[in-house]
Length: 321
Image (cartoon, rainbow, N blue to C red; front, side):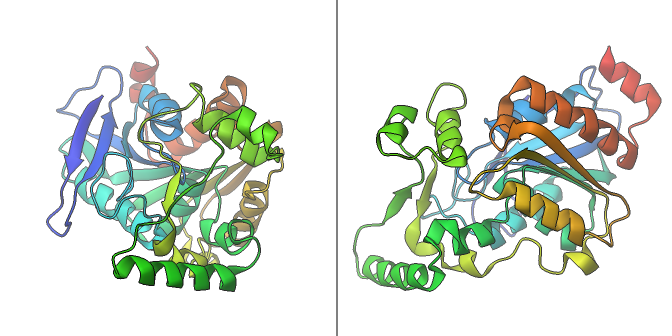
């Protein structure tokens, strides 16, 4: 693994990334590349890099797992902004960097995203035609989630509160940084926060299971207005032409990955190859790192990516050694 700072000429700040390389990597050769996108509130050292990124590198891909702008080790100020437009632009900027690497085949670039990262991956693929295939792992349409559960189904009230807070901050007031999860699973239980996705997110992000310094699970409240007017799937029927695989768990939670996965699969009618992988007995956060559901997901997505990113039989055999 190589850690890099991506600083393209049009960027005011850097993007921190880890490049995961295949076994028997030979820098004189060309490899297909995967851009791996972390969830909302996460970082590159969690599921996008340490689970799916690692597995895909072992299968012969160059994988770039990166921190979103304003988050993790990436630059940008103020911190902990979750801006879907910026998140999608980050994908293109990472691809801009990937195509400068002499060992990346610029015609064979795919993206994979987990949770909110899945929604961003799909949205980026609508207009970023350097992407040749996309995989969404328990992907969430963050815009819908903000309009619904994250705003207590009062998006206009949330927008009014954000506007008032941004005015306070513009006048010198303290930033309002919202912690998205309970401090521990025990705190979640004590406060009745046992809904499946909320509790399982806490178990992942707030325990040694998945906890990482960069995975702050925080959001700057005053800068989240545009999220409520964003839709990951807008124009999918027309613009989502590349091959797409949607992986979901059938144990439904409040963050809506099951519903969102069914929706985008149904709407991706222009895709050259659309596939839905619906896993029984597994939940949203099971697909982050639990060996059995992750293995089931990889069993489907690895051949899908190898097919569409032309990872030939010879290179597959080398990667498997």
